[in-house]
Structures are given as structure tokens and as C-alpha cells.
Image (cartoon, rainbow, N blue to C red):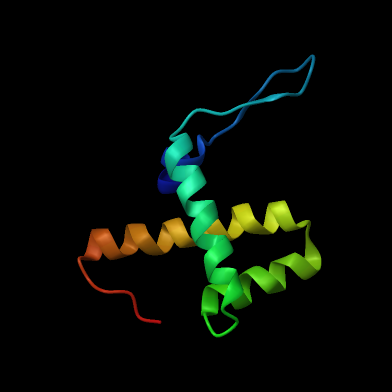
Length: 88
């Protein structure tokens, strides 16, 4: 949850009158993660692409892309925290 908060500006503050989301966080990191998800989505052999395709069947494509980017961020954080390569 903390990692996603750093990248996507979560938790999101909601204002009562207009219900708009105010995000803080690294725009560059968000953009880069989205690009990684789009590239990974082209290769159907990658497990992350399968995860994204499964989410796309249930949700809107943009929502699925953000959720997959959060999953990718969790994987990256675990790799850095444990100092181990990712097991595919």
C-alpha cells in the first residue's frame, strides 16, 4: 500500500462538494509504469499480460491498466526490498 501511495499519489483525498480526485505523486513514475504495462500486454506469454487481460474482461481497460501497474510496482518493490531477482 505504501509503494502504491508513492507512485500513484494514494490515498486519494476526495472533496465532498465536487468529488474530484487530487493526486500527488510522481507523474513520471506513473507514466513509465503505464508504458511498461502496455508493452508487456503485447506479449501474451508474460504472466503480467495474462493478469491484465483477465482484468480487462471484468473492468474498463484504463482501470485494468492502473491495477496492473500497481501489481508491477509491488513486484519491483519486493525485488528491491529483498535484493533478489524476480521469479517469472
